[in-house]
Length: 294
Image (cartoon, helix red, strand yellow):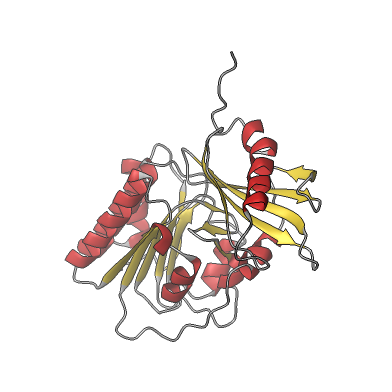
């Protein structure tokens, strides 16, 4: 009797696209079957969940499936691209897609909103789209409590509240700090209903001043996301240089906020010390911008 594949029961979530807000049950079933048979069941990597965006032709027929495959043991989002025919038959598979088309499409797939400056809003926001991962939820709640105890007004966003619209609203609201725990890749972070990508941070009207932004997400301290966030005016940006382990990386995240918010420690040395004390390897996290006291 053959063993069940480790990814056999991994959830596949089909997200709203620019062309369709709702997919019929038959379409969802075909999309899920395609992702499962051509990606999940052929991978030696273990996954937590897959979030899918479908790109359509002008006539509404499916054209490309983008699969954001969230790993089980790290905050890595592997991006796969499947070119399909009108019936979701697979024409080509790229299981490690490195192109930029997914960034532009992921941004277009979200409703475009204009947010006014937040009046009497929070000083800090901490969120995770994967609160079902216990260490992710615990890290966000810990950072939230640290901020409140330090005298700041704070908001926490868990699960569906860790959405593209909410992240855009708060990141554009001139906060003091913003922290995310979740899966990422070089071009963005994966949220509950889509992706927040370098394309959004690169928009002329997006200003992160004077935020300290910390993405506890894999590969986010790399182009194209890194230069986009820096150019948008973030005071300080912290992100994963490599694939961050689930568990140890959240300890670094909590340590960082505790020390910079309550002990007036300098941000650059604090990140280095927190990584040294809590992470199995050096240089997994990057920091740029103002490295002094918060």
